[in-house]
Length: 250
Image 1 (cartoon, rainbow, N blue to C red):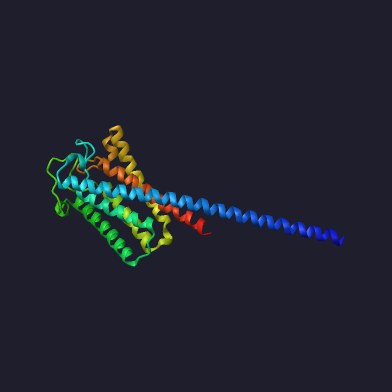
Image 2 (spheres, rainbow, N blue to C red):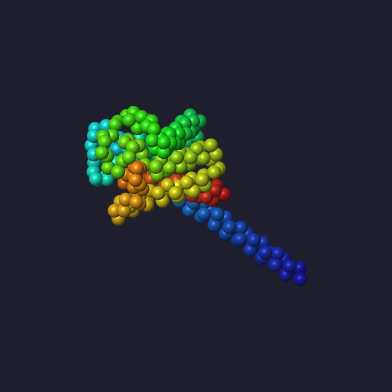
């Protein structure tokens, strides 16, 4: 009887040991998978950030040297405004900083200031469009010639463009001020990506209403729509990385 109890006890211990080993193996495999997903997502976001910055710089050069093909994909389409291009450069820079995960108070301070400035600038433009009062900020660097395609306020971005930049600026502030709320990047990235994709589809199917062509207002440019789609995707990936990082750390 005693021998039988000892065998049962030994079997239970062996079973528990096997279950523990299996659990540890599964956890290790999950960590490896999470690390691979994290690295893959981070790489995509870095590539998107670089594309956004380079595209913004290209459009800015198009305005400075007056090269129409650099300002809009097709001359008969709406051109990306200089202020919009400059804002994309700053957004790409901020997203790239996120992917580096550098803990530097100086860089964080710069990111907060840039994000807040972006939000404030777009809010000023928004009020300007609604009131019809020119801020002259749009003519600070270059001046758009009269008669621009589907452009109500010369040099002024479209209202949906302003909305997207405000959302992007808020996403940066949410992350920088409280990095435990990275989920907010996901929920902000979704509308930004949708707004961009709808406009892209509008240009593909030639439906001006889809790229926000409203009477008395500037339409969203095709290259602007493409970049917002990419930025939205990067924010979604950064937001989803919150779950990936948690799994990896556990």
